[in-house]
Length: 127
Image 1 (tube, rainbow, N blue to C red):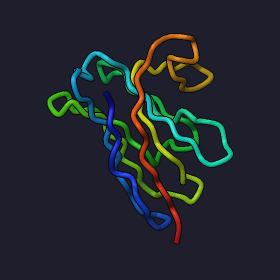
Image 2: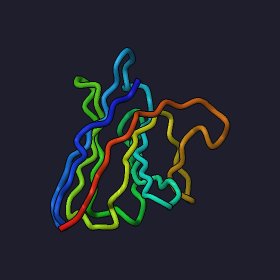
Image 3: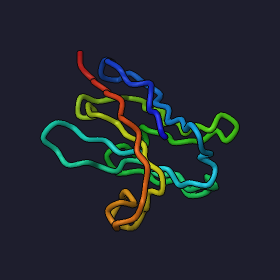
Image 4: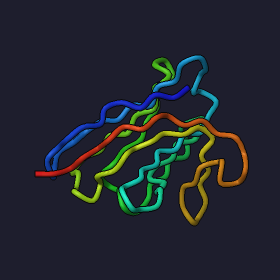
């Protein structure tokens, strides 16, 4: 089971750090993706980290502002979000077994394969 935390209300230009923690299983062997969905919009894959942490990818919309990392000992994947913009407002989710291609970051379930999701954490960027 995955649990996201760290969301909240922040002013434009502010920062938040989201956490994706696992219970009952180790995240060490999973690639993890961060996704977000704003009201009325499609889900967007925004960041990916491979199981080894060697491969890291970002969507163009967040590149240079967001940083993904993982702490094996803490069994947690983080998403540091800086210089937040109102268009970053969304519910943010983490998921296991995410996949990345030249077309973007996608959940494993889009291929009909298993993945695990958290319940999401709300991020609101507003003055």
